[in-house]
Length: 60
Length: 391
Image (cartoon, rainbow over all chains, first blue to last red; front, side, top):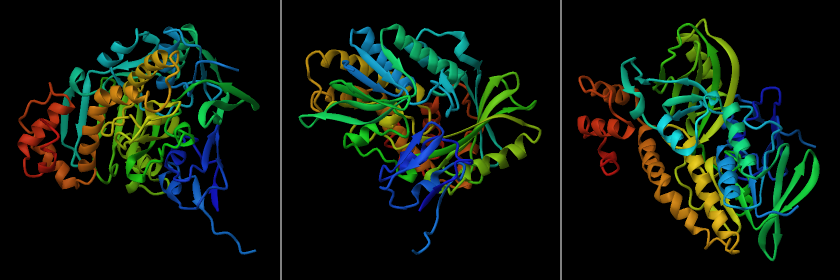
Protein backbone atom coordinates (compact mmCIF):
# COMPACT_ATOMS: atom_id res chain seq x y z
CA UNK A 1 0.00 0.00 0.00
CA UNK A 2 0.97 3.66 -0.35
CA UNK A 3 2.00 5.18 2.92
CA UNK A 4 2.18 8.93 3.50
CA UNK A 5 4.35 10.17 6.33
CA UNK A 6 2.34 13.22 7.28
CA UNK A 7 5.09 14.44 9.58
CA UNK A 8 7.46 14.65 6.58
CA UNK A 9 4.87 15.83 4.04
CA UNK A 10 5.09 19.49 2.98
CA UNK A 11 1.56 19.37 1.50
CA UNK A 12 2.63 20.80 -1.86
CA UNK A 13 0.46 18.60 -4.08
CA UNK A 14 3.24 17.55 -6.49
CA UNK A 15 2.24 13.90 -5.95
CA UNK A 16 -1.38 14.73 -6.78
CA UNK A 17 -0.28 16.32 -10.08
CA UNK A 18 1.55 13.19 -11.27
CA UNK A 19 -0.90 10.52 -10.09
CA UNK A 20 -2.14 8.72 -13.24
CA UNK A 21 -5.17 7.35 -11.37
CA UNK A 22 -6.24 10.65 -9.78
CA UNK A 23 -6.17 8.72 -6.52
CA UNK A 24 -4.52 11.40 -4.42
CA UNK A 25 -5.98 14.57 -2.98
CA UNK A 26 -4.37 17.42 -1.07
CA UNK A 27 -6.62 18.53 1.78
CA UNK A 28 -5.23 21.41 3.85
CA UNK A 29 -2.09 19.88 5.37
CA UNK A 30 -2.42 16.24 4.44
CA UNK A 31 -2.68 13.88 1.47
CA UNK A 32 -5.63 11.52 1.13
CA UNK A 33 -5.20 8.26 -0.82
CA UNK A 34 -8.31 6.72 -2.41
CA UNK A 35 -8.99 3.11 -3.36
CA UNK A 36 -8.16 4.02 -6.97
CA UNK A 37 -4.43 3.91 -6.10
CA UNK A 38 -2.70 1.34 -8.33
CA UNK A 39 0.55 1.39 -6.30
CA UNK A 40 2.50 2.46 -9.38
CA UNK A 41 4.95 4.40 -7.21
CA UNK A 42 5.24 7.47 -9.46
CA UNK A 43 4.37 9.81 -6.58
CA UNK A 44 7.05 8.32 -4.32
CA UNK A 45 9.81 9.41 -6.72
CA UNK A 46 8.36 12.89 -7.23
CA UNK A 47 7.92 13.86 -3.59
CA UNK A 48 10.46 16.62 -2.83
CA UNK A 49 10.66 15.56 0.81
CA UNK A 50 10.43 11.78 0.41
CA UNK A 51 7.21 11.52 2.41
CA UNK A 52 5.60 8.81 0.26
CA UNK A 53 6.53 5.15 0.29
CA UNK A 54 5.15 1.92 -1.11
CA UNK A 55 4.94 -0.67 1.62
CA UNK A 56 4.53 -4.38 0.98
CA UNK A 57 1.26 -5.60 2.38
CA UNK A 58 1.37 -8.46 4.83
CA UNK A 59 -0.36 -11.59 3.54
CA UNK A 60 -3.66 -12.23 5.22
CA UNK B 1 -26.41 28.48 -4.42
CA UNK B 2 -26.57 29.68 -8.00
CA UNK B 3 -24.23 31.91 -10.02
CA UNK B 4 -22.91 32.53 -13.54
CA UNK B 5 -19.36 31.32 -12.99
CA UNK B 6 -17.56 29.19 -10.39
CA UNK B 7 -13.80 29.63 -10.12
CA UNK B 8 -11.99 26.83 -8.29
CA UNK B 9 -8.77 28.14 -6.73
CA UNK B 10 -7.79 31.64 -5.62
CA UNK B 11 -4.22 31.92 -6.88
CA UNK B 12 -3.25 34.51 -9.51
CA UNK B 13 -5.06 32.59 -12.31
CA UNK B 14 -8.31 32.24 -10.36
CA UNK B 15 -8.37 35.76 -8.97
CA UNK B 16 -7.67 37.36 -12.36
CA UNK B 17 -10.42 35.25 -13.94
CA UNK B 18 -12.89 36.14 -11.20
CA UNK B 19 -11.98 39.82 -11.35
CA UNK B 20 -12.28 40.07 -15.15
CA UNK B 21 -15.59 38.19 -15.20
CA UNK B 22 -17.08 40.15 -12.28
CA UNK B 23 -16.01 43.47 -13.78
CA UNK B 24 -17.82 42.48 -16.97
CA UNK B 25 -20.99 41.86 -14.99
CA UNK B 26 -21.03 38.14 -14.21
CA UNK B 27 -22.17 36.79 -10.87
CA UNK B 28 -18.96 35.00 -9.78
CA UNK B 29 -18.13 32.65 -6.90
CA UNK B 30 -14.46 31.85 -6.25
CA UNK B 31 -13.57 28.88 -4.02
CA UNK B 32 -10.30 28.42 -2.15
CA UNK B 33 -9.74 25.15 -0.32
CA UNK B 34 -7.16 26.59 2.04
CA UNK B 35 -8.23 28.72 4.93
CA UNK B 36 -5.67 31.37 3.98
CA UNK B 37 -5.20 32.60 0.41
CA UNK B 38 -1.55 32.58 -0.65
CA UNK B 39 -0.20 30.49 2.20
CA UNK B 40 1.79 28.24 2.27
CA UNK B 41 3.83 29.61 -0.63
CA UNK B 42 5.15 27.19 -3.27
CA UNK B 43 6.99 29.60 -5.51
CA UNK B 44 10.35 31.34 -5.98
CA UNK B 45 8.33 34.57 -6.33
CA UNK B 46 10.28 36.11 -9.23
CA UNK B 47 8.32 38.07 -11.80
CA UNK B 48 9.08 40.41 -14.71
CA UNK B 49 8.59 44.02 -13.79
CA UNK B 50 7.30 45.11 -17.19
CA UNK B 51 4.96 42.14 -17.57
CA UNK B 52 3.45 42.60 -14.11
CA UNK B 53 2.91 46.33 -14.69
CA UNK B 54 0.88 45.49 -17.78
CA UNK B 55 -1.46 43.29 -15.74
CA UNK B 56 -2.23 45.27 -12.58
CA UNK B 57 -1.56 48.54 -10.85
CA UNK B 58 1.37 47.81 -8.57
CA UNK B 59 1.26 48.13 -4.83
CA UNK B 60 4.75 48.34 -3.25
CA UNK B 61 3.66 46.14 -0.33
CA UNK B 62 3.61 43.12 -2.70
CA UNK B 63 7.27 43.52 -3.54
CA UNK B 64 10.06 42.12 -1.36
CA UNK B 65 12.91 43.20 -3.59
CA UNK B 66 13.74 44.68 -6.94
CA UNK B 67 16.66 43.12 -8.80
CA UNK B 68 19.19 44.59 -11.24
CA UNK B 69 19.76 41.45 -13.21
CA UNK B 70 20.51 37.77 -13.31
CA UNK B 71 23.67 35.74 -12.95
CA UNK B 72 23.95 32.28 -14.40
CA UNK B 73 26.65 29.96 -13.06
CA UNK B 74 27.89 27.02 -15.11
CA UNK B 75 28.80 23.67 -13.56
CA UNK B 76 32.52 24.67 -13.42
CA UNK B 77 31.75 28.03 -11.81
CA UNK B 78 31.91 30.22 -14.92
CA UNK B 79 29.54 33.15 -14.68
CA UNK B 80 27.25 35.01 -17.12
CA UNK B 81 25.62 38.28 -16.09
CA UNK B 82 22.39 39.49 -17.69
CA UNK B 83 20.70 42.81 -17.04
CA UNK B 84 17.32 43.14 -15.46
CA UNK B 85 14.91 44.28 -18.17
CA UNK B 86 16.11 41.64 -20.60
CA UNK B 87 16.72 38.53 -18.54
CA UNK B 88 13.32 37.04 -19.27
CA UNK B 89 10.03 36.96 -17.52
CA UNK B 90 11.29 35.90 -14.11
CA UNK B 91 13.68 38.67 -13.20
CA UNK B 92 12.67 42.10 -12.01
CA UNK B 93 10.62 41.87 -8.85
CA UNK B 94 10.69 39.27 -6.14
CA UNK B 95 7.18 39.23 -4.70
CA UNK B 96 5.72 38.44 -1.32
CA UNK B 97 3.17 35.93 -2.59
CA UNK B 98 1.28 35.74 0.69
CA UNK B 99 0.47 39.44 0.30
CA UNK B 100 0.21 39.47 -3.50
CA UNK B 101 -2.22 36.55 -3.83
CA UNK B 102 -4.54 37.93 -1.22
CA UNK B 103 -4.44 41.39 -2.82
CA UNK B 104 -5.51 39.90 -6.16
CA UNK B 105 -8.34 38.01 -4.44
CA UNK B 106 -9.31 41.25 -2.73
CA UNK B 107 -9.46 42.95 -6.13
CA UNK B 108 -11.73 40.16 -7.39
CA UNK B 109 -13.93 40.66 -4.32
CA UNK B 110 -14.02 44.41 -4.88
CA UNK B 111 -15.10 43.77 -8.48
CA UNK B 112 -18.08 41.87 -7.06
CA UNK B 113 -16.95 38.24 -6.89
CA UNK B 114 -17.98 36.20 -3.86
CA UNK B 115 -14.91 34.58 -2.27
CA UNK B 116 -15.24 31.46 -0.13
CA UNK B 117 -12.21 30.15 1.76
CA UNK B 118 -11.81 26.72 3.39
CA UNK B 119 -14.15 25.55 0.66
CA UNK B 120 -12.95 22.54 -1.28
CA UNK B 121 -14.42 21.45 -4.60
CA UNK B 122 -15.35 17.76 -4.49
CA UNK B 123 -16.67 17.15 -7.99
CA UNK B 124 -18.78 18.38 -10.86
CA UNK B 125 -22.56 18.50 -10.78
CA UNK B 126 -24.22 17.34 -13.98
CA UNK B 127 -27.51 18.08 -15.67
CA UNK B 128 -28.47 16.50 -18.95
CA UNK B 129 -24.97 15.06 -19.26
CA UNK B 130 -23.16 18.40 -19.05
CA UNK B 131 -21.48 20.05 -16.05
CA UNK B 132 -23.91 22.27 -14.17
CA UNK B 133 -21.85 23.32 -11.17
CA UNK B 134 -19.60 22.17 -8.37
CA UNK B 135 -20.25 20.12 -5.29
CA UNK B 136 -18.07 21.42 -2.49
CA UNK B 137 -17.34 21.22 1.20
CA UNK B 138 -17.64 24.61 2.90
CA UNK B 139 -15.82 24.33 6.25
CA UNK B 140 -16.67 20.65 6.17
CA UNK B 141 -20.35 21.13 5.29
CA UNK B 142 -21.74 19.99 1.97
CA UNK B 143 -22.58 22.74 -0.49
CA UNK B 144 -23.84 22.73 -4.08
CA UNK B 145 -23.05 25.66 -6.35
CA UNK B 146 -24.89 25.70 -9.66
CA UNK B 147 -23.25 27.50 -12.57
CA UNK B 148 -23.16 26.96 -16.35
CA UNK B 149 -19.38 27.45 -16.52
CA UNK B 150 -16.61 26.23 -14.21
CA UNK B 151 -13.05 27.54 -14.18
CA UNK B 152 -10.36 25.14 -12.97
CA UNK B 153 -7.66 27.36 -11.48
CA UNK B 154 -6.71 24.64 -9.03
CA UNK B 155 -3.00 24.51 -9.62
CA UNK B 156 -0.51 21.69 -10.07
CA UNK B 157 -2.83 19.30 -8.18
CA UNK B 158 -5.79 20.25 -10.42
CA UNK B 159 -8.83 17.99 -10.28
CA UNK B 160 -11.38 20.05 -12.23
CA UNK B 161 -9.91 19.02 -15.59
CA UNK B 162 -9.83 15.35 -14.62
CA UNK B 163 -13.46 15.44 -13.52
CA UNK B 164 -14.29 16.83 -16.95
CA UNK B 165 -12.38 14.08 -18.74
CA UNK B 166 -9.16 16.02 -19.47
CA UNK B 167 -6.09 13.97 -18.55
CA UNK B 168 -3.83 16.52 -16.86
CA UNK B 169 -1.64 13.93 -15.08
CA UNK B 170 1.99 15.00 -15.43
CA UNK B 171 4.61 12.47 -16.48
CA UNK B 172 7.79 12.54 -14.36
CA UNK B 173 9.66 14.24 -17.22
CA UNK B 174 6.99 16.96 -17.27
CA UNK B 175 7.30 18.20 -13.70
CA UNK B 176 10.05 19.92 -11.74
CA UNK B 177 10.01 18.77 -8.13
CA UNK B 178 11.13 21.67 -5.95
CA UNK B 179 12.26 22.61 -2.48
CA UNK B 180 13.15 26.05 -1.18
CA UNK B 181 14.48 27.78 1.91
CA UNK B 182 13.95 31.37 2.88
CA UNK B 183 17.58 31.84 3.84
CA UNK B 184 19.33 34.55 5.84
CA UNK B 185 23.03 34.91 5.11
CA UNK B 186 25.56 37.72 4.79
CA UNK B 187 26.65 36.18 1.47
CA UNK B 188 23.26 36.79 -0.17
CA UNK B 189 23.45 39.20 -3.12
CA UNK B 190 20.51 41.56 -2.60
CA UNK B 191 20.59 42.84 -6.18
CA UNK B 192 20.80 39.82 -8.46
CA UNK B 193 18.78 36.70 -9.12
CA UNK B 194 21.20 33.80 -9.42
CA UNK B 195 20.86 30.52 -11.29
CA UNK B 196 23.22 27.57 -10.80
CA UNK B 197 23.38 24.84 -13.45
CA UNK B 198 24.82 21.34 -13.33
CA UNK B 199 23.82 17.70 -13.27
CA UNK B 200 25.26 17.21 -9.77
CA UNK B 201 23.71 20.43 -8.49
CA UNK B 202 20.20 20.03 -9.94
CA UNK B 203 19.61 17.23 -12.49
CA UNK B 204 17.34 18.52 -15.27
CA UNK B 205 16.72 21.75 -13.41
CA UNK B 206 18.60 24.45 -11.56
CA UNK B 207 19.26 26.00 -8.17
CA UNK B 208 18.12 29.58 -7.71
CA UNK B 209 18.70 32.39 -5.27
CA UNK B 210 16.12 35.18 -5.52
CA UNK B 211 16.73 38.07 -3.09
CA UNK B 212 13.98 39.10 -0.69
CA UNK B 213 15.83 42.12 0.78
CA UNK B 214 18.08 42.55 3.84
CA UNK B 215 20.30 39.53 3.16
CA UNK B 216 17.34 37.23 2.78
CA UNK B 217 16.69 35.11 -0.31
CA UNK B 218 14.52 32.33 -1.63
CA UNK B 219 17.19 29.69 -2.24
CA UNK B 220 15.59 26.75 -3.97
CA UNK B 221 16.01 23.85 -6.33
CA UNK B 222 14.03 22.25 -9.12
CA UNK B 223 14.86 18.70 -10.19
CA UNK B 224 13.25 17.10 -13.23
CA UNK B 225 10.87 14.39 -12.02
CA UNK B 226 12.36 11.76 -14.32
CA UNK B 227 15.79 12.41 -12.79
CA UNK B 228 14.57 12.49 -9.20
CA UNK B 229 14.08 9.92 -6.53
CA UNK B 230 12.25 10.08 -3.25
CA UNK B 231 13.38 13.26 -1.48
CA UNK B 232 16.08 14.24 -4.03
CA UNK B 233 15.21 17.99 -4.02
CA UNK B 234 15.53 18.53 -0.29
CA UNK B 235 18.72 16.45 -0.12
CA UNK B 236 20.41 18.36 -2.96
CA UNK B 237 19.22 21.72 -1.62
CA UNK B 238 20.76 20.98 1.77
CA UNK B 239 24.02 19.99 0.05
CA UNK B 240 24.04 23.19 -1.99
CA UNK B 241 23.33 25.42 0.99
CA UNK B 242 25.97 23.67 3.09
CA UNK B 243 28.55 24.42 0.40
CA UNK B 244 27.44 27.86 -0.73
CA UNK B 245 25.93 29.35 2.43
CA UNK B 246 27.43 27.33 5.32
CA UNK B 247 26.36 29.97 7.84
CA UNK B 248 22.90 30.36 6.29
CA UNK B 249 19.89 30.29 8.57
CA UNK B 250 16.63 28.79 7.34
CA UNK B 251 13.63 30.94 8.26
CA UNK B 252 11.06 29.12 6.17
CA UNK B 253 10.82 25.93 4.13
CA UNK B 254 8.73 25.51 0.99
CA UNK B 255 8.10 22.64 -1.43
CA UNK B 256 6.17 22.29 -4.66
CA UNK B 257 5.77 20.83 -8.12
CA UNK B 258 6.03 22.94 -11.28
CA UNK B 259 4.49 21.73 -14.57
CA UNK B 260 7.02 21.82 -17.45
CA UNK B 261 4.94 19.75 -19.88
CA UNK B 262 4.43 22.44 -22.50
CA UNK B 263 0.89 23.01 -23.79
CA UNK B 264 -1.46 20.09 -23.13
CA UNK B 265 -3.85 18.79 -25.78
CA UNK B 266 -6.91 20.56 -24.48
CA UNK B 267 -7.73 22.99 -21.70
CA UNK B 268 -11.49 23.06 -22.26
CA UNK B 269 -14.43 20.68 -21.98
CA UNK B 270 -18.18 21.24 -22.02
CA UNK B 271 -18.77 23.86 -19.33
CA UNK B 272 -15.13 23.82 -18.14
CA UNK B 273 -12.04 26.00 -18.73
CA UNK B 274 -8.60 25.41 -17.17
CA UNK B 275 -6.22 28.29 -16.40
CA UNK B 276 -2.71 28.69 -14.96
CA UNK B 277 -0.81 25.71 -13.55
CA UNK B 278 -4.01 23.64 -13.84
CA UNK B 279 -3.75 24.20 -17.62
CA UNK B 280 0.03 23.49 -17.41
CA UNK B 281 0.75 27.05 -18.64
CA UNK B 282 3.95 27.58 -16.63
CA UNK B 283 7.15 28.20 -18.59
CA UNK B 284 9.06 24.95 -19.23
CA UNK B 285 12.51 26.59 -19.03
CA UNK B 286 12.22 28.99 -16.13
CA UNK B 287 9.31 27.37 -14.32
CA UNK B 288 7.76 30.82 -14.00
CA UNK B 289 3.99 30.73 -13.99
CA UNK B 290 2.58 33.92 -12.46
CA UNK B 291 2.34 36.11 -15.55
CA UNK B 292 1.06 33.34 -17.85
CA UNK B 293 -1.53 32.42 -15.23
CA UNK B 294 -2.69 36.02 -14.89
CA UNK B 295 -2.90 36.52 -18.64
CA UNK B 296 -4.81 33.30 -19.16
CA UNK B 297 -7.10 34.27 -16.28
CA UNK B 298 -8.00 37.59 -17.89
CA UNK B 299 -8.67 35.83 -21.21
CA UNK B 300 -10.88 33.21 -19.53
CA UNK B 301 -12.76 35.83 -17.49
CA UNK B 302 -13.47 38.02 -20.51
CA UNK B 303 -14.52 35.07 -22.63
CA UNK B 304 -16.77 33.77 -19.85
CA UNK B 305 -18.43 37.19 -19.61
CA UNK B 306 -19.10 37.09 -23.32
CA UNK B 307 -20.32 33.48 -23.62
CA UNK B 308 -22.23 32.76 -20.39
CA UNK B 309 -25.04 35.29 -21.05
CA UNK B 310 -25.46 33.73 -24.51
CA UNK B 311 -25.58 30.25 -23.04
CA UNK B 312 -22.70 29.15 -25.26
CA UNK B 313 -20.49 27.15 -22.91
CA UNK B 314 -20.04 23.87 -24.79
CA UNK B 315 -16.51 22.77 -25.71
CA UNK B 316 -16.91 24.03 -29.24
CA UNK B 317 -17.85 27.54 -28.13
CA UNK B 318 -14.94 27.58 -25.69
CA UNK B 319 -12.42 27.08 -28.51
CA UNK B 320 -12.11 30.85 -28.59
CA UNK B 321 -10.21 30.52 -25.27
CA UNK B 322 -7.96 27.74 -26.62
CA UNK B 323 -7.17 29.85 -29.65
CA UNK B 324 -6.50 33.02 -27.70
CA UNK B 325 -4.03 31.58 -25.19
CA UNK B 326 -2.27 29.29 -27.66
CA UNK B 327 -1.64 32.20 -30.03
CA UNK B 328 -0.23 34.40 -27.26
CA UNK B 329 1.43 32.80 -24.22
CA UNK B 330 1.22 29.38 -25.87
CA UNK B 331 3.84 30.28 -28.46
CA UNK B 332 6.66 30.85 -26.00
CA UNK B 333 5.53 27.90 -23.87
CA UNK B 334 5.74 25.63 -26.94
CA UNK B 335 9.17 26.89 -27.96
CA UNK B 336 10.56 26.79 -24.45
CA UNK B 337 9.29 23.24 -23.98
CA UNK B 338 11.31 22.11 -27.00
CA UNK B 339 14.39 23.96 -25.77
CA UNK B 340 13.98 22.43 -22.30
CA UNK B 341 13.62 18.91 -23.73
CA UNK B 342 17.00 19.43 -25.38
CA UNK B 343 18.79 21.11 -22.46
CA UNK B 344 17.82 18.62 -19.75
CA UNK B 345 19.94 15.92 -21.37
CA UNK B 346 23.12 17.98 -21.78
CA UNK B 347 26.17 16.82 -19.84
CA UNK B 348 28.12 19.15 -17.57
CA UNK B 349 30.83 19.26 -20.25
CA UNK B 350 28.22 20.44 -22.77
CA UNK B 351 26.93 23.09 -20.35
CA UNK B 352 30.45 24.33 -19.57
CA UNK B 353 31.24 24.41 -23.25
CA UNK B 354 28.15 26.50 -23.96
CA UNK B 355 28.92 28.98 -21.22
CA UNK B 356 32.59 29.27 -22.26
CA UNK B 357 31.43 29.98 -25.81
CA UNK B 358 30.00 33.26 -24.48
CA UNK B 359 33.46 34.39 -23.40
CA UNK B 360 34.04 37.82 -24.92
CA UNK B 361 30.39 38.17 -25.99
CA UNK B 362 28.45 41.01 -24.37
CA UNK B 363 25.40 39.27 -22.96
CA UNK B 364 24.46 42.04 -20.53
CA UNK B 365 21.74 43.32 -22.83
CA UNK B 366 20.29 39.97 -23.87
CA UNK B 367 17.02 38.33 -22.96
CA UNK B 368 16.56 34.55 -22.84
CA UNK B 369 15.73 34.35 -26.54
CA UNK B 370 18.68 36.57 -27.44
CA UNK B 371 20.99 34.45 -25.32
CA UNK B 372 19.81 31.29 -27.10
CA UNK B 373 20.46 32.95 -30.45
CA UNK B 374 24.04 33.79 -29.50
CA UNK B 375 24.57 30.28 -28.14
CA UNK B 376 23.30 28.87 -31.42
CA UNK B 377 25.64 31.07 -33.42
CA UNK B 378 28.65 30.06 -31.29
CA UNK B 379 27.75 26.35 -31.10
CA UNK B 380 26.04 25.42 -34.36
CA UNK B 381 26.95 21.75 -34.11
CA UNK B 382 26.02 21.10 -30.48
CA UNK B 383 22.74 23.00 -30.81
CA UNK B 384 21.84 21.76 -34.28
CA UNK B 385 18.52 20.38 -33.02
CA UNK B 386 17.45 23.80 -31.79
CA UNK B 387 18.11 25.65 -35.02
CA UNK B 388 14.52 25.50 -36.24
CA UNK B 389 13.16 26.81 -32.94
CA UNK B 390 15.11 30.01 -32.68
CA UNK B 391 14.80 32.45 -35.55
